[in-house]
Image (cartoon, rainbow, N blue to C red; front, side, top):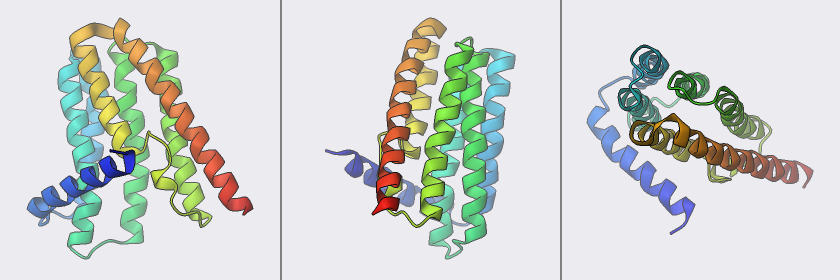
Amino acid sequence: MGLTYLRERLRDVALRVARYVAPVNPNTLTLSGLIFSILTPVVAWTSRNSLLAGVLASISFLMDALDGSVARLRGEASKSGAFLDSVVDRVSDAAIVSAFYFLGCDFLLVYVITVLSLTVSYIRARAESLGVTGIKEIGFMTREFRSISFIVVFLVHHFLGAHITNYVLTLLLLILGVTALQRWVYTYRALRS
């Protein structure tokens, strides 16, 4: 069972769930996800409750997983919607990762993970704007797996504390770095051929 298979299964699940929320405007889902992502570090800072912060992050990721599927189901997929979704995804990632700092994790780890997460996304966006295809499937830390990884980190923090979470964040940092490198190499080769 490869990564592509897992991604396809996750997208199938998102499409099935999207049928139930299809009456909701896709941009409303996108902006709702943004609100939940911004609330995540606020709750982490004010309550120090990693479980509650993780729930808010999960809702944000769910909204992100559904907005595109709902737009396609409603026949409302548009370039402006895709642009809004892309910008909101970057802000959401940065907001959610910042919550780990407010939960007592190492600042430098949180900062580098934020930069790498944004870099992985930026490489994809820039490559696609240059006509490179297939980039969204390159590397382990695609959007779906980054979202799942962040939720796992919240759970690790809740059950094992900040010290152990820093080790998990270090592993996440390494995998993000490898994904960024894989996408850079893939894009560079595609542009040269």
